[in-house]
Image (tube, rainbow, N blue to C red; front, top):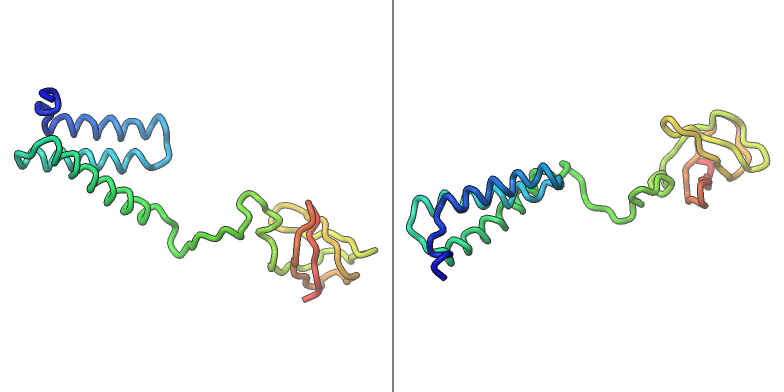
Length: 147
């Protein structure tokens, strides 16, 4: 293919800039790493006289390294993926947490304040100031026990 034989270092640089620019249109912090890999490939092709097949393999290798490096750089420190946290399920995130009752629970029902929101709770009858632990969630109601 004569067209592919004419591709040089500037083609990789242009591809890298297009991919990095594409990150602005479709943000997700992924295209930027592929764009960086294309720029690095352009530098390698510019410094050496390699064919397009080898350049494609170099790009694939740089892409893998850049994406893995990007993942390590953008991951929050000390964060371990936890599938049990209940992403977008605030109630499940509260299980195991301890809170103090603002008011006495009557009839096995009451409310606790969590941050800037108020949650309906059910559990044993307790006096205001008692500490309770969230043990499970039933819809929008937290089930608590005395600590």
